[in-house]
Length: 457
Ligand code: NAP
Image (cartoon, rainbow, N blue to C red; front, side, top):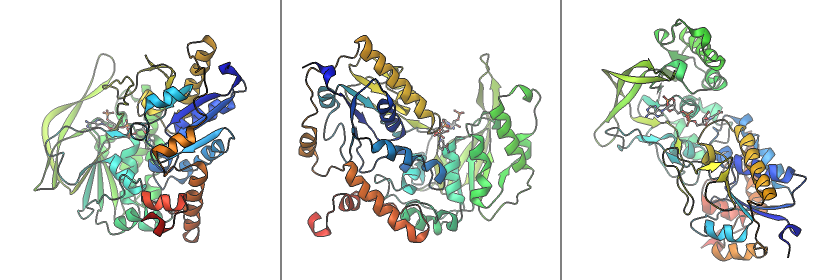
């Protein structure tokens, strides 16, 4: 049979923003007839929008309605609770589908590589974020919130997210879809200061201005910035506009016009963690003071001056970026933590494409993934037209449902996910919350599969 006489069969591995934007871009092509199956190892779709975006960023999270709409397409199917690499393999997918698109994000975290990093109380932001967002892998973690100060290492938006959540009043958080276990733990938190440290200066911080500017709105407090660290420097006119805007916000904070609340965030620059100390758990962080030097290429880098500062803390969160993890059978660039690709086509692998963070690294905001996925889909179509992408002779997807059910009897389909979505939203309604998240896999499956508790046993 002529392969072009049937729809192009596409498997998308990962159901986060980039996966959905790839699906949307494929469905939008008038010149393509596509049948698309989306896989996720978790029982719920939306990836980082459900498990990464902070619960108090409701507006950013509302993009999930776009994904729901894409999920209504007649040629779309969702298969959750099935893991590629465990229940099925990437090779099997490639044998069945004309195209496999990996949209798996970057699940690993980066380490600081300093003594004491493995002490209890030293954690990756990815764990803390997963915990407060009800990610089943992190729902059972416990964090010691009994000391007065938490330290967040890193100057990106994730650092601001975790600092804001640690500083927000209970009443604010209680209106969000934060996981109930986190809401309860944070209610009893004794933390009064969250110290956010950046290794370079304020002009090199990776925060985006809206995220920097909104801190007082969510935390009911001003932000502590040392005026001398944000003093005007000659030559600022030439700085990029985004940097100037950040400096403006930081200077407003440093002016002290908004009073610091009982709980507040402090931002300090040119500080690198050099050691974590404590007896069985973190009690102190030693920070090295840095000076900044500009290289010939214009890049500003931090250099240790030898000066040290010891700060008391019981909780250190490193928010120094995410890291992609290799996928069996595909090439991997360990330095960049990505799958090497050319405009989304995986180098040296047939019929295989990538989108999102595993394609370009953990950069940009949710919307950045739309352009990124469109680029991959355009490459895919070009490859189809040029014959670089050769479709299978036979349609290998006819028995997909029974094949998958044989590997994972507790599959979560789009319909089953809808039951979870409805149940969570309904539970949130009486409390004025967007949803109450179900965080335990078995509980999710009870709802998704209409299982009674007795059937589970
Ligand atoms: P990021 O923006 O890349 O920031 C990482 C930070 O970690 C940088 O300040 C970096 O400093 C620092 N860092 C790296 N290694 C370090 C080390 N060894 N010691 C000390 N500091 C170190 O990463 P992210 O915060 O994880 O965010 C990932 C992406 O998600 C970003 O694009 C971000 O904008 C996005 N995001 C957006 C939102 C939002 O829109 N609200 C929320 C969360 C995340 P250097 O610059 O010196 O390397």
